[in-house]
Image (cartoon, rainbow, N blue to C red):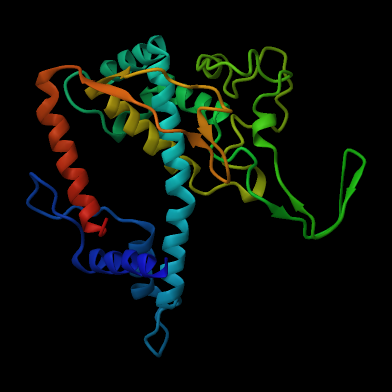
Length: 293
């Protein structure tokens, strides 16, 4: 595992040194900066002490980068796969999302500039994070002091888990909590039913809550929205067989929950879009190769 982490650090060091990646159709390198290149560059500029050493050792940097990947990749992948599954199973929802994408980007593959103009896709993502949280039991936290919750004393040192699954399916908060209804997040910013108490509530608890909230929440959500927008602009997603939406049979559980393997067909929406799709693919491959992936 450490050898893999070390390879990520080596790639970041190379990128930091040469200033970016030259992507297809561009003469100059584009700076696809990641956290690791940022830390390396800041260290070179600001954190060198008199001995010329950085604030982090190479091993520490490797574990930092690898830990971030381990924490983000599986959960983001699981959410993306769940959303594709539900878009295939709910063609009416998929069509609404597609119409929204083509409204802001009718002639070219959408990019990050239009994120604020995709409220329905944002609602679809919020609903999938509510309905199929990749971390249904949250992550454990250890109390650093005694606490009282609803009259129960919880002693210092206790490991506490937030039951994300239960909170996000509470019928006191949500109409039809077991149903996939993205519109709930258009009707209320937190997806709550009319009259529900919204005090201290969040749209979802997939990324945690409070001071230990996941720092990658906005990044992960934006990445999925862009990916889904590009996917829907390019392809229609059709079931290639029965789709199992049952959480007992169609999903695997554990620290990260996600759908079991399923089959869908990606049908090209317009042959005129083929070149744009291939261009996006080439850029993606070049950038990943620059990071050693």
